Image 1 (cartoon, rainbow, N blue to C red):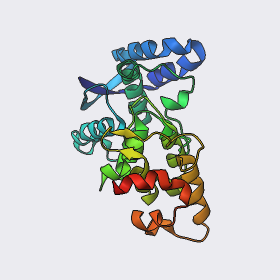
Image 2 (image 1 turned 90 degrees about the horizontal axis):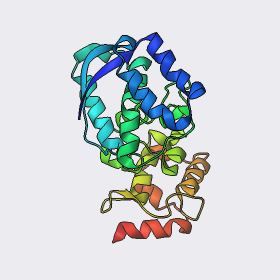
Image 3 (image 1 turned 60 degrees about the vertical axis):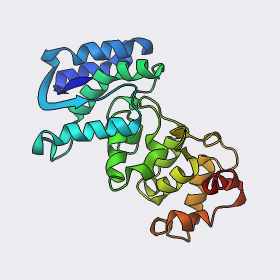
Image 4 (image 1 turned 180 degrees about the vertical axis):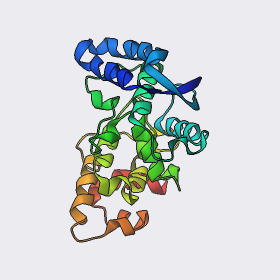
Length: 239
């Protein structure tokens, strides 16, 4: 589908954000879309977004980047919060419906705030900034870009919550361990707190960071340091 990208005015942003205190959670997606369609609450940016649904985070992020680049230096100083809010309002119901998912209570998934520590949870802006962090090799970040655009699996939470890990070889390591190129999804067991899970990987990387600058190491070098609990995933690399 092809969408004209718009930017909410202050009134539009206020109306969008107020939905979380005024509406039932299940009604927010449709109410949001109606707000995005109200031309008095937004202004055109000149950009258009072309995307096929359902979309994973990588395809959404690539489509957003192409859209923003198409208007020259319009967004050279960054993407205004009004644009992110409008995109979230416009895409929310379509993304959820295309993936058969229900709306969650947390506004962090759709409302951009000044709290940069939780921005990675935003379903529209999060994938975009993750792509920018790994623009030289997006395939290496498939562990956090392979899931549906409306979803936020534990792999994303564990890896992107740490800035030390999110923009480093840590994400590439997780891709090697947990991303299955055949199914184009995450391997069974990557979530949870079992042996070799992403939660255990995050703890391991934080532990060795005290004495080792793993961000300067290659995936192969870190793989050699992993304890035996990760064997179920490392064995898959040799098949």
